[in-house]
Image (cartoon, rainbow, N blue to C red; front, side, top):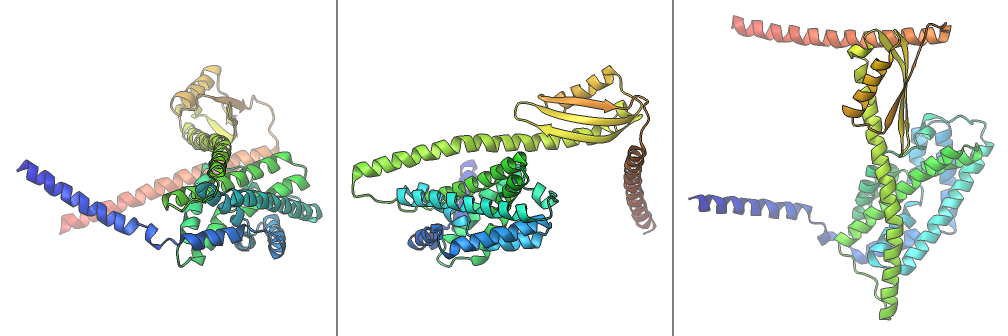
Length: 387
């Protein structure tokens, strides 16, 4: 009886597995020749493509400069930057030396033109302030990695179909956001702010790498035919060169991506720490006026600016202990800045009052919400009792 149940269960699992494979199978509609031809053509960068990229970079720079999301999206739709990046992934996946060389060369030219165009624009622009759209492109997060990788997967899967989905390809161009980081890097050059340049260019590199990686993974999973060479020795040499190139790029990229993940975890935990200690007994008579976070792969710092009753050394030590043991931020240092009775200027007073009022209003709103929910439940209970 037990054996019969087990066999029946295995048959059900087998049927479910076949159904999953039926719905998830994508090789059947793959057009290998058309995909390789399409990507190879999109890698080519000369003539009108140069001008399209130049104009698109200027449009994106204007959008970043005036903080217009719609303008930035429009610029990303007309940008030809995706071609060489997917070309790199396809070349590595099929061991195509010529395509890899052409893709890398054209990507380098595109980057130089993009940086030159955006730098020129920001040198001439009367608006030199870093708006929110610009600042958002100066520091990569784990979400940028996810967007680039899964956006790249969607792009190559759509490109490899016999009936290519222009909607998907256009959506990938918007989601992966290759142009805004290059424009922000140009802003950093034009305004001589090296950290803006480095942060934005790092974001562009992360996006490009994971789009190429997604293309490579998909090409291998779909079993694209590898490039054939007449000379067997040349085939082995090309394969070895591409493998070494892949390792050289992959190892530091994984390290950098790991650092992005660690930074995201640090930011998440530090925000939770600041929000929760405000309601602790340690800060019963003290208000957090401001909190700053600074991340470095070797050390992290959380700075709290407090107002109210000053904390003693033991209380500060307890906060540090909570930060390390309860939130897992063992490398983080806690710096506490607090008033010691000196006069506070009017601006700081207004900030303190506004901060306290906001927190009190939020508390009142939460209490009102709880009261309304309790009243609703009590009303339902009374109605049920009457019935």
